[in-house]
Length: 175
Image (cartoon, rainbow, N blue to C red; front, side):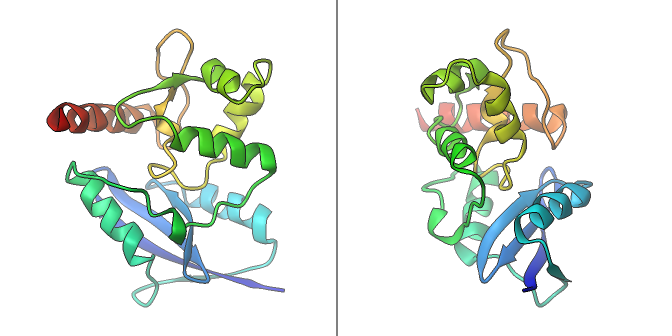
């Protein structure tokens, strides 16, 4: 069976993001230059894909509204009802733990592993974090090294720092 994956572009302050949907649900959100990553992750999930891109493809309106609000510094409730996260049970648990990290805060990979009740699974947590298909919304950028330094990020460390700074500003504006 072939799965149709629709890809649209979203203009953000960080460049043109790629948003991929399947059956009207967001399955992937990624940064400029990461189309190979998008294709690799989604091909693992759906095997046979019919890629569609263009003016007729769109992401769910709730996702687009959330992104508009987020970049305007006013993000609210995540539009999870219009997002499909496909992964192993462990990956799903990591992604849910990421969502639980409050905006403007960060956690270490080790801290996330402890939160999941698997303190020895730091590398597995890091791998699941790296395979997060919905960047920004599932905030993998909030995970940092145990020494407090920024570590790998599919969007690049400059974008990770931008997101953390943006969320810190959002948090202080709300206080």
